Structures are given as C-alpha cells and as structure tokens.
Length: 107
Image (cartoon, rainbow, N blue to C red):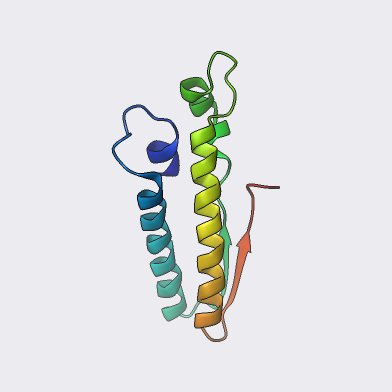
C-alpha cells in the first residue's frame, strides 16, 4: 500500500502521504488491539522496508541512474516513525502485553 500510494507513482498522486500513512497506522493499531482481545499477548510488529529502493520505484522515480526514489523512502521513514510510536503507546495501554517493534528499514 505504501508503495502504491507514496512511491513516486504518477498514477496515485491523489492522496497525501501523511493522510495515507495515518490511515494505515490506525488500521494496524486496530488490528493489534483485536489480536489482544483474542488473547494474543506477545506480538511483533515489523517496520516497512525502504520502498523507494524497490526496483519498480527506482525505475519510475530514480532518474536515469535508477537511484532510490526519495519520496518513497521519506514516506517509509514517516510511516515507521509513526508505527514505532503507536506500538510504544499500545504497549503501555494493553496490560500484560509484550509488543515489540522490529525495525527492518535500518538493518
């Protein structure tokens, strides 16, 4: 979803990156809370990858040298920051939960 909406895709310039990432964070938060209601207590949440470096986005937005598309990576960084903060919030809100944010963007 992040790739299709925020990755320098010329066909999807309709949505604002912050609006879209906020919506995805809300969906993820609701999903985690639903898992918790169903009895899950140990939940791992993975960040997204640098989507601007995916081959298709390097082709579309990376110029003649096919460098990583800056907009896609900025959207991924914004998303990951928001996701990490939401996981921290949920960890404090959901008693007996063990929520872990795993940052695969940087590693």
